[in-house]
Length: 353
Image (cartoon, rainbow, N blue to C red; front, side):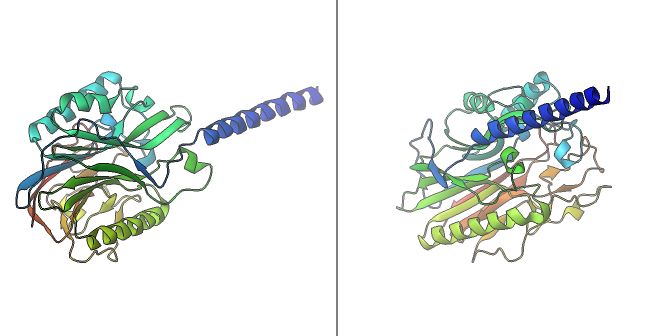
């Protein structure tokens, strides 16, 4: 009897080991491995050419895969949910996001966490839906999260993910490139993490120069911000090279740092500073560059609990860094009370000097 029991237990353990091993092998063999740089398609390219001295607007918005609305929490931040509450709610959130973006009439948009086909957003192709609703723009999309199956949380797994970042422009682009950002967690965690990246769009200017747009989304849950430091070093080196060419440069998106010139204390909350949020390193100071941020409007909330005014910690982590030859005219954060996403959008108006 004892031998039979041991045999059964041994068989169960062996089956579990084989299952886990087989699963890890499958995910490893299907791991998304982007090249350091990859050209990406520019769909619906426009003919409009940017002029020096002409003002233009740019909005950045991490749409949270249209799933992290005000009633949601997220397991990675201490909550319990891994997916949007329902397909109906996801579509409602996406409709609200589309309505906001359309009403802004910005000349350019930086979008992050846009799903193509993910369990968390009920396989809704958000890229296609945004293309339908925003006419008169070119579209450049790059993957940064492509995993066949994310098995956590165990009882409500994140599932399959295919998501990325997206840049829209009403001006002509000559090229669009995906730049892979450095930094990986140890195996096997790296198999299930995002492959962080930024999109570079090169916009010709009438005076013969280029406006280089960089839409980025840095890491969030790297312990101690170690990977973010590597990514900022990479971005800093990139900025230096482009500055030496004499081009105009706007780097923006979701930095996952409390941005310079802002203070979360401006937004009263009962929650304290979350572990995942890093202060922006003082050592990162590209010469002559300026930050375009709205210090009075929070751009992100904590998602360990649903949103409650005065409870959730909020900060400014979305904004723009611009080269000395770009004038900042105005910056406006839009406090949507996290109705559709855990982030709020930010719009800036610029002029090329």
